[in-house]
Figure 1 (cartoon, rainbow, N blue to C red):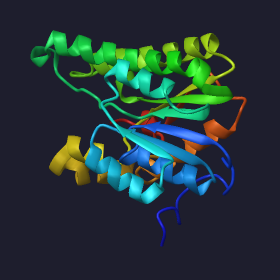
Figure 2 (tube, rainbow, N blue to C red):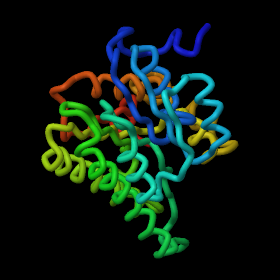
Figure 3 (tube, rainbow, N blue to C red):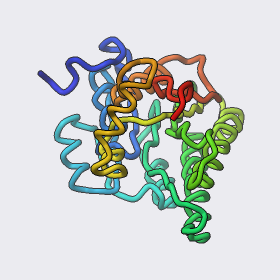
Figure 4 (cartoon, rainbow, N blue to C red):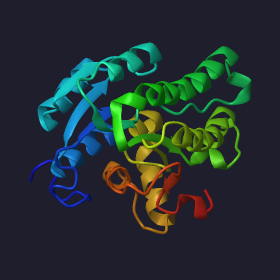
Length: 252
């Protein structure tokens, strides 16, 4: 079976002739989105921090170009986008990882940097995209839903969870007719989740299978399918789209 067979996604050809830049495209949601873009007839540009993983991803999805750099270096990120040849149709940013640190263990400098960098990445992408992304194209960012429930260790994540939708809505007005949207994901079964949970991963999967209304764990293919829908539906902008399998509806 090929990499795209059996995966959820739009009909083949839905992105024909379009180019999607995936920042953080070497694994997880980013790589799965690149797979689905290719299956839908589009071209991809891939970036990631880890050059080795990026090369493996490129061998699979055959991007028109790729670049290895840390997307948290906002000057480098903005320069990369501005220097892309011609216009592109969509930019998706999946780079970054959540931080869960109790207040007693929190380094204030690190916390400020994590919060500020996440905001700065979105601003840098938006600024570079005013002339780089075609009218009606999409900037698409990945956020989360976990921070909506106050809990120990969730102070920074909770603040980001509240801030990102507001930033998305404001950017959608400021750089229109380029569209700007945010995907707020719950637990998604990806290599990042595995690295964060370690030997607790399978227990978390089993808990979610038993408690989520959908009766299964949300995977990268589910998030990628939503991403492609947002890219191809030109009426969507300034909004936050939850995808968590009903996780917010049940006790955790």
